[in-house]
Image (cartoon, rainbow, N blue to C red):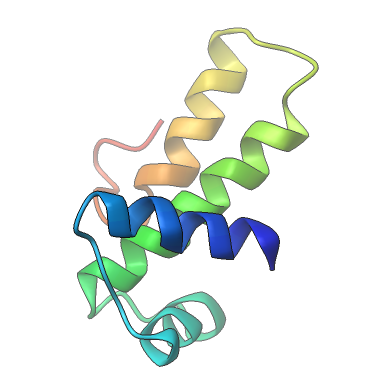
Length: 79
């Protein structure tokens, strides 16, 4: 929950906003129809990947973090 809260807060700084419902639907149902919500969820997933991979910073770990960030909104560029 803390990561989601931070994702929403940092997204607000970038003028990227979505309702709590839209974020929940994007997260729980994989609904990417609301781009901002999908991007906020992707940001949360990227932070989770960064935490998981924090003990190793190599090309593979960075690509995994990038894939988590871009998968929902730009799948062709992910990873």
